[in-house]
Image (cartoon, rainbow, N blue to C red; front, side, top):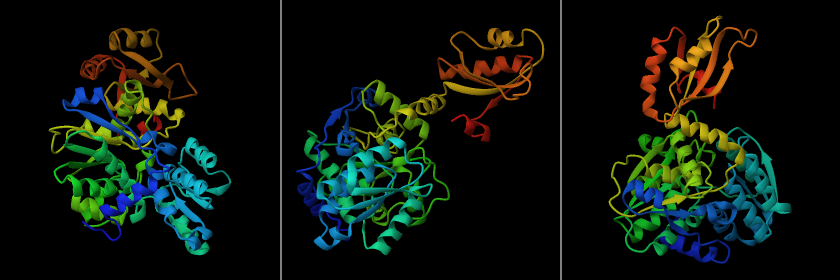
Length: 417
């Protein structure tokens, strides 16, 4: 199928253009996921790509295709971090001046990488609280200065470059592929991958994996066209896009077989497992696809599965939050408000009679700072197994202490993460 200038032939040309600079990232078997799903699972390791993300494929393909006059005017982009690194790399390689508009939630690690990669060729500009706000500022810059706006996902040249991930998967995988799972933010990677695969392997089942806090493609499909989300959870920052791209939407509408929303907690659990078992450092968006593989899908995989690990630009300082979100999602960590009376032995009773063996207090803080002898305390408890919760709640109900569970959906819980 043909979508403006986006065609399988354009993806092939992009692959030729990228061959001298981009890495041909590996397609590795995951014994962990293969055992869990009961079918062979392989990971397309775009975390090994230059700049640790597939984004450089799209940025380089677009910028390298510019004419002399356009190169002289320079380029500008908006990004949550990875596309900006791809643009910085391309500007340095092609010696073209560029400006990068970054939302304020961009991790410090990504900001430093952009500066290190681009050097004198790139100027970072911090603006807005989301990608969409940064994008507005970047496009206004392009209109006022004449700089070419390098869209991170809604440009045929960007999508063609990103679609080379699908071309490589097809070339690297031995034998037929049943299911390919691709992370979704703005929809560029998904559009490019599905366009190539469906052209050459029409029976492959392609699944898009969105963060549950930023389901812009689902909103577009339900609405009959792209629409701005009223709220975006920016935890999965590489895929936290409030409005999916027009071109990506059209391709996904026609060709994508299934779309799944992945809870942020499930993403965190997969990040931890990728790190501890597979030795892979994935950012939240990078773990979306393999996290989706572990969820119930509309059509369970019947054969080999490929998941795209789309990025490895994770800030080490975020791992404490990642582990916390994972434990909460797995039902292993719970929080309670416990009112301890002003009498001896109240805390000892809680430890001896309410908690069971293997259940640990991982957080304890009096809510009333002016009087620590009595009053409610916020208590975090970690369980060995999620199934222990019912018995714990039963003992709490039988206790003379006043105990209230803090549910993950409550406003108070937002202060814990």
